[in-house]
Image 1 (tube, rainbow, N blue to C red):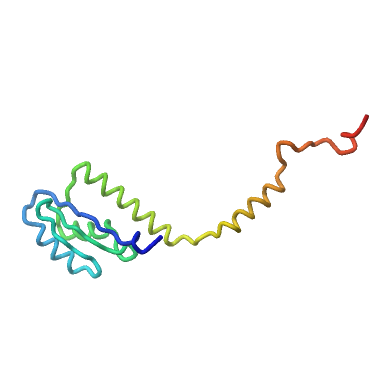
Image 2 (cartoon, rainbow, N blue to C red):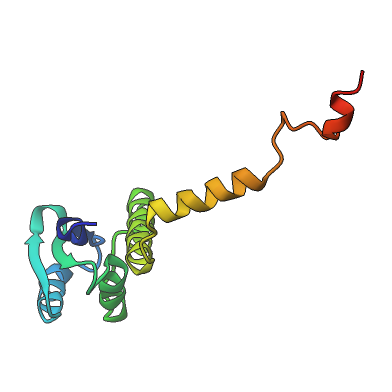
Length: 132
């Protein structure tokens, strides 16, 4: 996984009510280290940029909700949020997983295959096969 894959740019959408929460949310997010914040007033959103190894969208949105901000809760927003949470969690899990060298794992399968009786294996003892 490259460094570009680990840098995320996401939008956090806010609900219509209470009005005026966007500037406060931007101020709050700008205090978080290593998070780029850009307000999107026309969309009632904040665009955030972060390294996945340091932050996740779920963490950033939880911070906002803990401070009393109201996020957009339309069905589409909830689905997108759940998908992003899942993808980021999976990427973090894959980062922690050790790399498996393919060559060694293939050798294990080859050895197992050699020991496994195949479909064309004849159980008849050799001396009986040649009996006439």
